[in-house]
Length: 518
Image 1: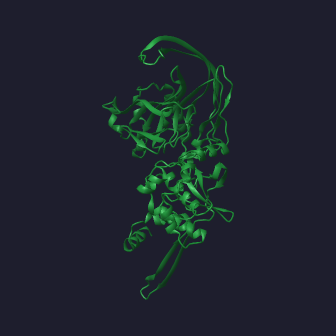
Image 2: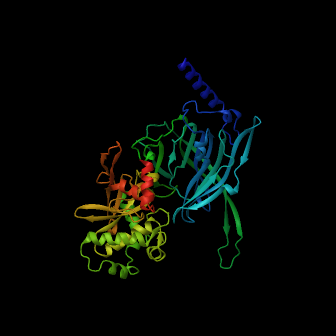
Image 3: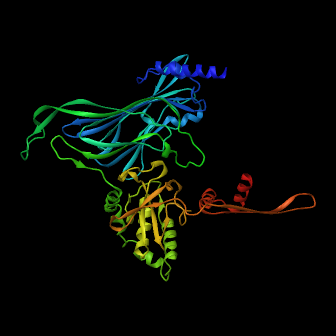
C-alpha cells in the first residue's frame, strides 16, 4: 500500500510538473496549494523553476557585452524556508571597462487570497547595495509579504563587460523541480568547461552551434578640432557569426544537504565552470589567454595594491624599531609584531587579498580589510628580517579554484618560513594565534607568493589536532553529595572558539554560563 501511494505521488508530481506554465507571472493555484515537495518532504522550500541564459550582445561602440538572465520561482513551505526570500548577487567592478551591473529587476510574492492568486510587487525599498571590498559589491533584495505557503518569483539580468563566465550552479541546498540553462558563446571566444568532478549529481549537457546575425548602426563624427559632438552620418551594419551553445533541461535535482564532517558543501555542488583560454577575431591571429598559477601569482604580486604595498615601510619604521628594541629571537619579534598589528588595526569586515585603503592609511586610521591587515603584518615582519610572505587563499564560501585565475583567491594570510616549516598568521581576529587563522579560510590549499612573484602551493590544514581535555576530581560526602572540581583544557581551534564565545564575560558570569551548558 505504501509503495502504491508513493508511485501515485510521484506520478502526480511529474504530471503537475509537465502542466506547469513557467512563463514569468504565471504562478498557478496548484503551486500555492502545494504543502510539501513529493520527492523531498523534509524540504523547507523548493525551487519550482530556474532559468539561466547567458549570451553576448554586440554593439559597434562597446563590442560584446555579456548578458546573464536569471529567472527563479521558489515555493516556501514553512518559516524555516524564509531565508530564500532574500537574494544576494555579487557584482565585480574594477573600472568602467571592467564591471558588472544588475538591471531589469522584477519580482513578486504570490499568495492565495479567497482562492484567488494575488501578487505583491517587489518595491525599491526592498532593494539595496552593499560594498564588499574595493572590487566587489552586492545587490541585495528581499521579497515582500513572505509567509508560509507563498511562491516567490523574480527575474533580473547581470550586464557585464567581462568576457569570463562565472560558475553556472546546477544544484542548491533545496530541491529543484525544473532547471533550464543555456550558454551561447560567439565563435571568437574559446572556453574550456568543467563539470565539478566531486559532485554526486552529474547532469547531461547538450552542445550545438547556431548562426546569429547582430544588426545595428554606427555613428560617424567630425574629427576636426572644435567640431560639434553631433554625428555627421549613421551607417547600418550586420555582424554575422556562429554561436557555440551549451544547454540542458533538468528535472528533479536533489538538494545538496549538510553532512557531518563536511565543512564546505560548495566543494560537492553540481556546477559548470568556465575557463577563458583564447580569442580569435574574424581577421586576426589567435590570442592565448590560457595561463598557469605562476603567471597568475606573478601578476598579483605586481599589483601596486599587493606587492607594491609590501615595500612601504617609512610610516611604521620608528614604531616597530621601538617595539623590538633589544629583542634578538626571530619568533619573539614575530610574536610582538603580531600582537601589535592585532591591536593597532581592526578588521572592518571586508574581505580581499589586496590593500583596499593602502597600508599607510589603514595604519593611521586603525582599520582595514583583510588585505590591509595581513599585508601590513607581512611587511613589518620582512622589515625586521624575518622570512615572511603573503599566502593567497580562497575562502570556503568562495570555493576551490580549479584553474588558474586571479578571481580564484579572495583572502590573504601571512606565512612565516622558519626552519623548513611554514607557520600561518592571521591578524584579522583578536583571538587568532600562531597557525590559527580565520576558519572560513581553512580551505584545502593556499598559494604562498614570494618576492618577485615565485610561488608554491601550501597545505592550510592544521598541523596538530585540536583537543579538549576534561579532568574531574570528586569525593562523596556523608550525605552522598558529590563535591569536587572540574577542569577543562582546550587547544588549537577549540581554544580559539572558547575565547571567541566567551569574550567579554567576567569570571562569575562565565562560571554561570558554563554551568548552564553542563
